[in-house]
Length: 325
Image (cartoon, rainbow, N blue to C red; front, side, top):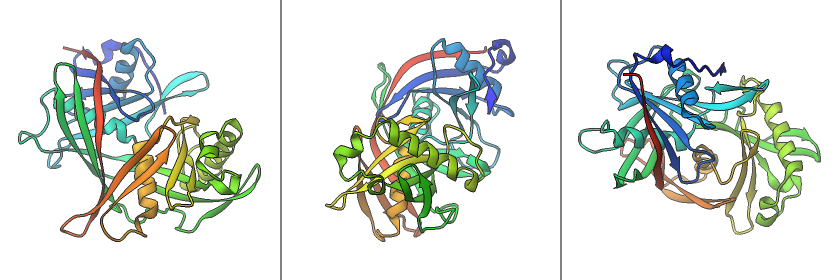
């Protein structure tokens, strides 16, 4: 993690444009920083952009040209703004699907999408592992900065999505032992069987408060070192998973140590990855959460690879500014 700086002169010659975008279902807007040239070190630009906004920012994403020879629209770097010892710092360990859509929408709005109008291809490097995510952006109202966005996420492109094995772990927490399954797809998530904590239905899941939040924080602290992650309020993301009597799936997860208002796109991807082995063909999976329900499509491409698709997310520009020349 890196502490935020405020010296705008450090990036005065870079010439970047910045937009603040809201994505339906996101826990917070994303500050998107777009550079027309590749940056050897994106951190000074990210720090300066956050400081220049003059308002609290929880998520920031950089898009800049990828290295020569890489067939993508842009390379994407995400950082979560978190608190560490009373300071605001940038944590570059997590990923954010909503911020990917914000970044792709920003590029589209600035005329930097594919010439044929096809999906943008964003290259990410979480933990050094390359991944290309497709983002389809459609303009709804250019003047108001309103777009419709969708995401295509590769499934199984980094081998097993179960870094600690497919069988549940048993974790000792307040209230007794609980089974938990770690899925690393988009972000590492730890899914805890909600019924083991006395959460028997969706009403109880929605009413989960500070006591269960503390349990999930403990789950995160216990599983982080097993995944080679430092103790932080970000990763892995702990979540309660409830399998309803009708077979439906419902999730309540933490985001930066508090309840997410709905379900992160990476959380939706992780849930779909969790059950993909039981769904050999194409299917649409609906997952219930605090703000309603989200649907993710499981699709098989002609070459046999499988992808997860999310469509119909509205992305709206909240602010626009330019740094540098």
